[in-house]
Image (cartoon, rainbow, N blue to C red; front, top):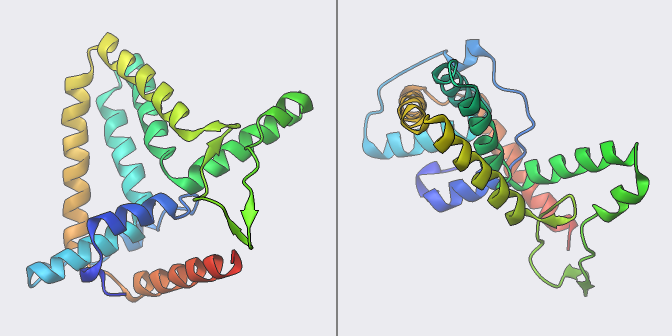
Length: 209
């Protein structure tokens, strides 16, 4: 895959749709080999490839750095968790998996309530959905959960007075992510993994027709 032709919008869409439940890459691989990119084109391709391939590692890195900045602010830790969930809900795979697990847990205690948490039926015309598949969480539109979690987290940020702390911690976390993605040399395993996930996406789209 030529990452130089991938736009930022394409990368964001790919990160929204890809499965985030995969375990992080081993530390021996994550800190394996670093080189300086020879040109802007090489750097542009490398950073996109690494952001996609090491996405779980970067997410854990950002959470750890944010957690270290909130050791003395319990409300800020809760606000950070809610903020992370709000962002994670934007990923289709995470939102669907979260909804399924919550519904499965509720079904053990109240099958009637779990039945109400099912997503609405989407009609199919000539073998294809009538509209783009909407994502529901526990039977409600995804945007409702994103709005509620974001509002609560913003309130907690304001009450805990930790907004400046999170800005500094987030800046450090993002800087560390960009530096690693810029100097970590993409290996053959990363390229093969990208091709494999591309094939799965194409096959999944073909099977839905």
